[in-house]
Length: 468
Picture 1: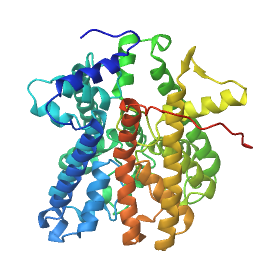
Picture 2: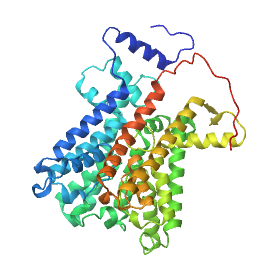
Picture 3: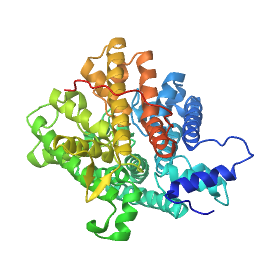
Picture 4: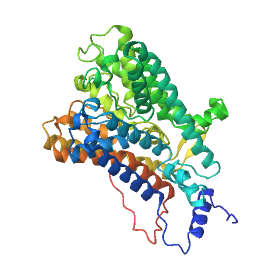
């Protein structure tokens, strides 16, 4: 197929797919495929969790509870109406672990893992869907990248499980150590936030390990690695120099480091003397837990600090970082670091009277700036709507209700204690938010990437408005 003058590689792939599918009926778009696959996974998970064998002592959960938990696990969020270990048997915990793994790895491959496993040969259509799902502008090397994602993910999870198992073994025995090591390594790398430490103290999460740097730093490292994405790690492995990295990788690393440091400093400043969080800890422990709080806000959701005990300022900072989330092409959710960074660069450019947004001697297309603004506005409006609905239908204050809504949209999983108090309408809102936070944001982004711009056949006369 010849390349037309001025035609991008992405346009060629779209034209090739159209020719390939000619006469076969309308092809299913990647966005619809992603949404349907994840919905199917949630439905299967719900059915499995409703089985008597999935609950401890045969105490079956309700349909809504199973749906809530399955959605939270598949969308790697971590919100749950009850303690994971106390409610679920070994079978139920295994189901959750599988949902977390599928949800986490599925979002790095954007649900194309199923196609990859069941197709001996990856055709043009499958390659294009993979490229879309990984936010690539071309299909060259996409299958190799898919293998790298899977091998790299499993390797990091295995390493984390090994470290945690060796650390827990002397104190808790090999069986518990291995079970905890595998479960929490996968949960951390996939940014899920589920834990089974309720066996030691129900509902405690990681608060039992506030003075354990090995546990917190191991899990924190897995969260950060999973939140960066293998597109960035592959670029780093090939270039081995920050100066040679792509603009996207530079932005991801810069934003990630800046957000981690900012969250660390703000958490320590706001919570340093708060007796319900950092106040009663020695200095080294305050610094350690302040750092882990900054990390876990990046959509991980491990509760090392009592989120309900945060100051109002601490909750506000937490919500801001939760809605930002991690990076594209990773296990993390949220708006994504580069999206927020593009918005900040746009504001800075406008404040200086410039019409274009530039970074690292490159210009960011205005269409991408508008896309970032659209996604951000949708997330903020939904968060406010969710906070209002939850506070209006449940015995929860607006701040804690907004905290819950933001946590669900950002697929974080932290709660200020509102999850167990949610009414049925509020639970349905949270379920929808968790699904949208994972599937919706991705499909909207793919729509921006792959959608054809509507051709405007006419324009109305312009008018001037007072702005500001």
